[in-house]
Image 1 (tube, rainbow, N blue to C red):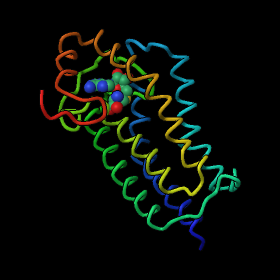
Image 2 (image 1 turned 180 degrees about the vertical axis):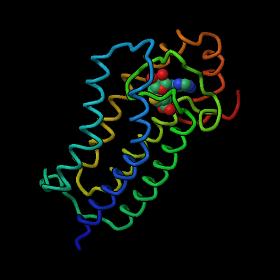
Image 3 (image 1 turned 135 degrees about the vertical axis):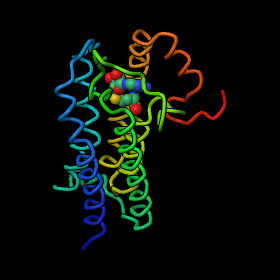
Image 4 (image 1 turned 120 degrees about the horizontal axis):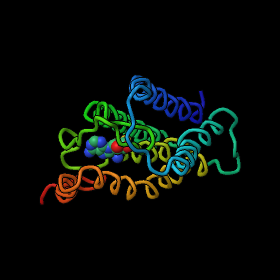
Length: 196
Ligand code: SAH
């Protein structure tokens, strides 16, 4: 088996693991009543961009070898490092879903029964699920020996992150007021904050 095939299998295993973790939450989320959903159309565009970078472009490389001109020699060490980062991403991803529970949504939404989560992996970071996606994008860059497929995740998810995160925090501040304001002063966005 070639190293390129190993790279494709490792990346594919990460994506399947991600889907297994997410699936039950996606099913449950469909049944939750929504109070507010700001910027619906923009949110859908962001999802498509992020999905293209984290899935469609690397999938095209794994299945079709496209774009061949951007290939470089695979390194077993980079693939192994990427596998570790992907494993860490999935672990964090599972914990964010557990801690966020019924408050999770794929696009920006405030639920009628929304509760502000500030414990577990949310104690020191406001966006641990986005931190997990950053780790996925980093793992993809390490695993896939192709500059386009490798970097697509950082570009695609990065676009969603930077366009969404300020809007998400504004939405949370409108809903939870001083409680959210206080929460922002003791946490970091994706990098844990340990002192006030
Ligand atoms: N940005 C968070 C959550 C991603 S899911 C993270 O990266 O972990 C996006 C949804 O989560 C948003 O629609 C918002 O309603 C909800 N959300 C974000 N932070 C929250 C929190 N601390 N408590 C409860 N819900 C939250």
